[in-house]
Each structure stands twice: as structure tokens, then as C-alpha cells.
Amino acid sequence: MAKKSGTRILIGLVCTVCKSRNYVTTRNKLNTPEKLKPKKFCKKCRVVREHKEVEKLK
Image 1: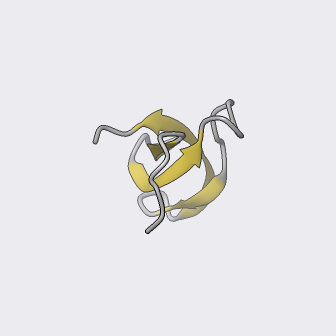
Image 2: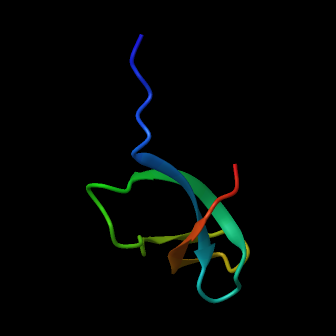
């Protein structure tokens, strides 16, 4: 069985326009120290918008 590493953190992605939390994902904090800003589909706006990263509570 693979050993779980503590380098991956759980994050949430929030729409920059309507501020709704749409996605939950993980990221490796050693390889990508900057925050993510992917363009994803917002379910509330019904448009592809930029989402920003926020910390997700466990």
C-alpha cells in the first residue's frame, strides 16, 4: 500500500464573480507554491469563468 504524503493539501475553487464554491481538488504545495487560478465552468453563472483557490477545511 502506498504511503500517504503530507505534501498534498485539499483546496476549494471559488468563482471570482459570484463567489460560489464549485470545485474541490488537491494540489502539491512543494511543486506549486503559488495559488491556482484555473478557468472552469461556474454552475451558478453558467459560463466558463476564472476560479481562485481557497483553503478547504477538512
